Length: 322
Ligand code: SF4
Image 1 (tube, helix red, strand yellow):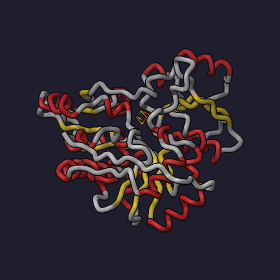
Image 2 (cartoon, rainbow, N blue to C red):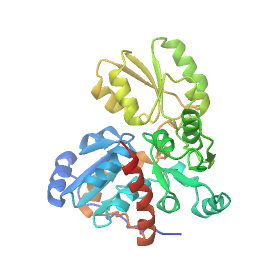
Image 3 (spheres, protein in one colour):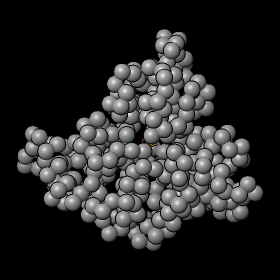
Image 4 (cartoon, rainbow, N blue to C red):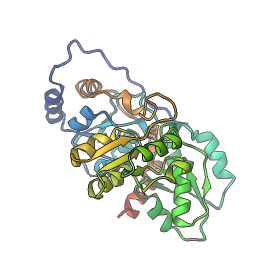
């Protein structure tokens, strides 16, 4: 078991009015790069040097020459950046920004699960803790999961963790029989199939585009399934002008920027709540981003043995991704 050092943020005496200017000044002063996930608030996306999904952000983290990486995303993403860049300062605007999916895979239980399948290799979705990555053979993202599993010899049994919905989707696409860890994302399991069908009736020309972390009944209604980057690309290129978007609605900010004449309708959750928004991602704010840079904390740290073990399966993924 490993621990991550928790640093408490000092309260600022003043907060600059123009946070964008202040953040840009700090980028120059610290030689910092701001990486943001598509599920972040729109103003954080607008302050970022690079916006992407997990695969794109991992690549950026591996290639950056910055001294400081400010990761506007959730904990496992910043942790991945630290695994790849042990010498760099990696900041996460809010250390409480975790992930319900990563939390469904506790390391001790997963070690027992793995021990019960000794002839299997472990392919883990990047949405897991460093401890799970350290127990994995290859990491994947929703962009490359299908392609990575296809590259593994057919007679090699595979455990797929932690997301059962992405695992089931990979099974369908590859025809492979995977042993699935039964984890799930609270956001992507919350879309209402019934309300999506109602929206399809209301907007008969709209295409449903969905992330593979959604449950099978939702995916059945999808005209296109893909990672956030793939959904963005598809929405831009498709001839359709209306889309029902079944993933975290933060992505709609980029969709609207890149396809201004099209309409994007967020897929509704089951209850009348905002629970299609990731509560973990939304803990980060522009103010916290500024404060993290100003105070150079909260910092992500990792025990070196975990970091080294977790690095190998990430490097395998990067080598196997086109
Ligand atoms: S949307 Fe789901 S998988 Fe992504 S960070 Fe939030 S809880 Fe985790």
